[in-house]
Length: 166
Image (cartoon, helix red, strand yellow):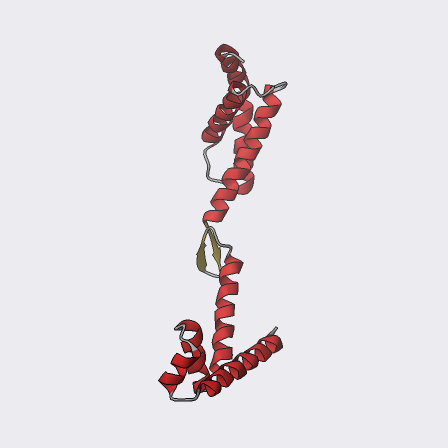
């Protein structure tokens, strides 16, 4: 397609592209400018013709590109920020994932809170601080076998409580 042919086609179909974009934006409450969407569509159509894409019906293809562009703009706007119960959740992570993470943290706190102080201390030193059994035994003053048993019993209790919660 030559530049002159493209100009003729774009002048002919631009009003239809604007109508499609305006109708989509009014139906979805989108704030995007219909002129920008139509322009983006025409740029895409030109790039396709430059790459040698066979264009049988330029108007039909342009309408399809316009619809896809409208949907892409709509989705991008919806991902940026979605309020949920008065809270704003940033895009990139679904709101449900954030809520799930918070629920998991509360559940973990509840389960760990039900353990004895000795069990909590040994688990913290082992899992968070990365200490070996020998190092934990030296810190607590308990035999290594006792530390190992304490950690094992604590993990077993946590697993049982988790199974009951789920």
